[in-house]
Length: 495
Image (cartoon, rainbow, N blue to C red; front, side, top):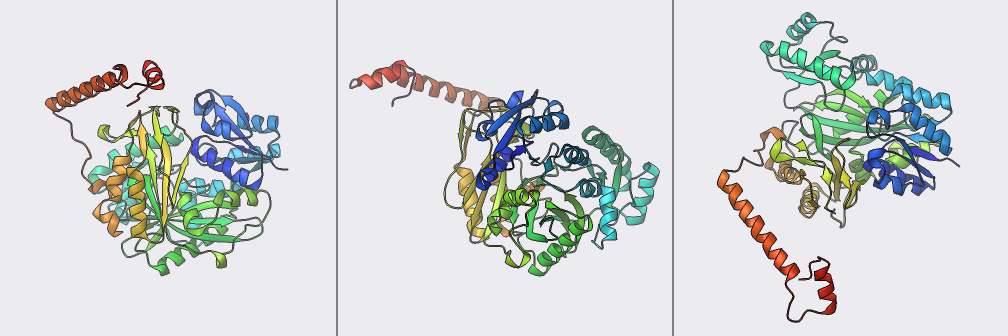
């Protein structure tokens, strides 16, 4: 009997635990001091503390994760996404310890983990790539030379990057030096590697990715496309499948190229090939994520395939349960990422207690989360609270369903981005399905700074409401029952 240790936290840990339960596999959660009372801890069959709140001393500590696996007898480690999920050295440590890592081999991770190496690998495999520098830039002089060769605008990107970090758009030559220095600083801060490279900037691009799945028996398939162009600061916030307005010919061609790319690096497991697509539907390889993606629910909703179950089956040496001939897209799905952040303050994180947390329920809705009402959103980790997904037979119905769900999602005690998500899915460009990665920048600011008299008015309303509620709680009614009196004296609202 296999046992699965989940080397992660929050909603993805809960997601993997559910897949383990479906397969009848015992699960082990790991937790930091900040997560001792978190939902994934009590959902798992066992739980092990791996260190203090700091990620470097807990979720990013390979030796502590492996010790937890050894102590509990876990035979598989599922890394989720983030943390150790794309760490080739950790994969090799698992191999040496005799524990199966649920994911690709270290060769695929290394080939695709360094963006310049990935570009070279894909070019050799016949996969179209964006014109750019041959390998990392040695210095600013080389950056100038490459830009003159391929022409502006260009993108500076961190060679070891991911998640939208270490990226700068350069429109003209006078912007290059500041962008070069800024990209190197950010790359060094996030990835401990200041190396950057250059790609030709695609004008009004769409960010479309293809989900791939490969087992150890020589089978590789694609599970079609996801549109990921709704981004804020290069971070995805809304995804959908199928990509609206994409021709079926291009969709299938991208799928075939993605399978070709996965085979080129001997890929095994679930992964994603990300493409930039121009207005004429020419597509170019951007990067490969050698792990499960945050946005995997939309693919599951339109294909009916449980990607985490398939990951676990493949890791246990079994063939995948699907073939390319049996796969199809059915209906439409949209996912919105709900974050604890304040749109009125530049989307600053808003950690704190979830005094109210009531996600919507109903036909065609799915909520992936790792919290319950009363939990505290920690300031130590990512600010995502939940992923809200909707499925419907067609895109217009799906948009209506996700908007209704967002409108009934109740969160109190912290700030959140639901109003911003509603603004996007209600925008003319999104509804028409004609948008690119610049859509968020075309929307007006949600909030302006209130005038001083507005603050005074809001304070007066708040104080009046508080006084009214206090009167309700303390003043007895003429027909007050014994139960009502007891509730009032206990400080509960009774009417």
